Image 1: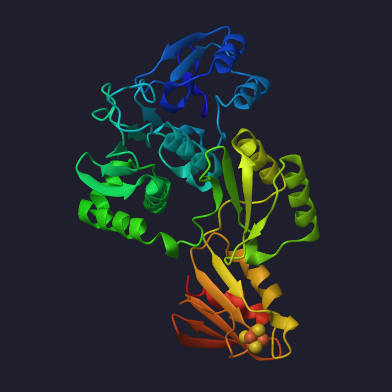
Image 2: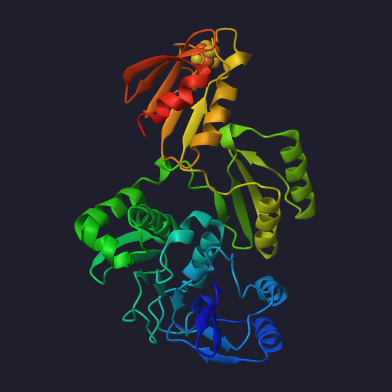
Length: 387
Ligand code: SF4
């Protein structure tokens, strides 16, 4: 349920339902919460509610509690279509409902996507006799077998990927779409992006993602189903790999509460909580969000060597990196700070590289060219000159 839409007679609310499904519990909640107005089924298998008055915060929270309303910032993107006979159709090749639910979970966690058009839609076609394949969706995920899908854009381009890659690909497409959206003043439709990039180039980009999963170090962040369907794992992003004592205590509390038996630290300096029972997975994510843990990295990728914990260091790289992280978080840059010319922990090409050269001073490189020698406090100003 996104923002209410004013209508001549009052207000219109949309209840977006994954594949049009509601449980009995949800149905009862609709019955008790949406009492005064009129309910309608939409052409996307959603419900819309027309009412003379606005719904109270309490009612919206009650609908959220039973999963009828998602994260309010991205709820308008929950346009997820499935065949009404998904999971019960004898002709179907596979049941894509779990994949569609993963897409819904994904959207709930990606608040950066809130700028996308509310028309952005994804259909999941498991090969049911009652097919939704011909209906309008920006992206169609079509089963090609039990573990194989095709991602279809514009009803023409079709890239075959394994079912486990689908959310990755959708993630990539959503972020390409976000980049495109940010270039414009309006909320362009997805088809406009396809026209702008060209279908061939876009297809190439999808193929690159589907074969390059290992080079996506953030692919483990967020909520993911485990091999055993009863459990999920949650990847948590930690800026610069820092875990404060408060955060540690909070993780322990979460583990106790949801009977999570272990925590895994990753080579990308993040944390994975495995074995979160599916019945707790959403709640667990909510608690973690409440503790201000994040499930996605900011556009800025920043790394730093040990800095003042190393005798060779000229500079306090960790503190300087934190300051830059705070000021440049929304910039899609790759930046590394090194305390000396040894460049420990530097393992990739960066937009900016700062190398300690004297007490509290850096050589600053941009695109591998030395551009300045600056004091630590001047790093930000000098980097900004190139943005
Ligand atoms: S790059 Fe230099 S300062 Fe940083 S950890 Fe390595 S040796 Fe120490």
